[in-house]
Length: 116
Length: 110
Image (cartoon, rainbow over all chains, first blue to last red):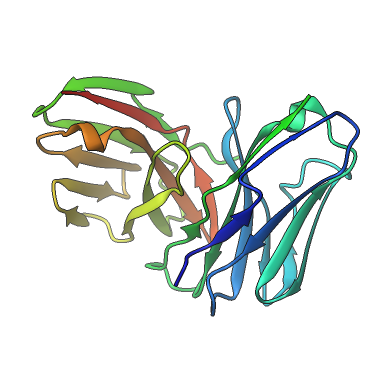
């Protein structure tokens, strides 16, 4: 398996523009997570899905952020409008058995977002 | 708000040194603790999932222990090599949601 795939790997945009980040989880994984990594807050969970349904979005910072999972193999995280403070590395991760204490989460390589 | 603390924040060692770092977490309602290794521009790589008090797991030169009663886990690296240079993250599993520490950045000089 190719692992979790994210695109783009790098994104530079101007304040006010819409940004869309994409993720393809590992095939067969029912759970998908979006994380954000910043110097100030470290790695924090934004939202996660189970069988394409959002389960917990309590980490989504504000209404400018939205996430969708239209099917089992694709998810998007959208920021509209983007602001400089959104600059961070955004990771997607997937997992197959959340109820199994021994199960880990598999991370993608991240999207490095810079909002000017 | 759960607090997962890692220490030290950064560590500089010479090749061949053995090193260890700490992850502290609230001991109540423990479920599982994860260790990840993260090199810049790469995916965080899962090292261990620790679930039982007294657990000790090993992967090559890297090992980890767990004390759920006092709320800490240690990660050890024996005979550090330059390729071990990375940020080591621990994360408390709260029913599937991972709460990460800030990480320990390890630099191993040849």
